[in-house]
Length: 270
Ligand code: CIR
Image (cartoon, rainbow, N blue to C red; front, side):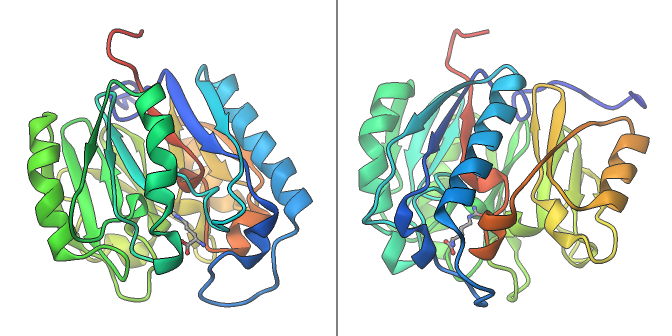
């Protein structure tokens, strides 16, 4: 395994919350219109995603679709779960703001506590967690007010928040990076060049395969969007156990892999 650190609380999870895609996903936000996703194909790819998490040993709860919120399948954005405790965030896109309140009851049922951001704007897609740090990228969805409100909450849960500047053309910080073991990120060369990954090893995506960066590490496996052979090969050569999952429909609405689940461990669960 190339001497890499395999387990840590940032990459080991007992549970995950997902939300089934709604038929309204065809209205999902996108920076560039390359056609609407096909809701049925999206559902099939989402089912494969859930199966991928389950195969990695995660107990997955799939919440009912929310037709009123086209982007609600991207359940990572309205909340952050740290050490089993959920923080209800304030998503930055107006059409997504109501997703936070809609998700809260599920967080109350499934997590060890629920806190509220309270002010400002923060999308979960702008947050990358290591074992001891929470890196938050400022973006069109995440502002300084939100980061200020998040800092003491994260601190109280035993993490240190670090602010990073996301290049303006990127939707979310994690659109172009993903933690693949407690000490390593997969990132696009563009994001890596900003110098935001202090203290972490960086593996860069191959040219033309930038969408592979939004990978997730789950219990010793790295889940990567299918269709990125050079990056996948790079990861395998570095000793990672790669699982490829189709994300063709999620990609049409600027999503990837991390955004479709909240991964966490319950306190006391092993
Ligand atoms: C949006 O623009 O909010 C959605 N269409 C995509 C959100 C993807 N979320 C993420 O990467 N965390």
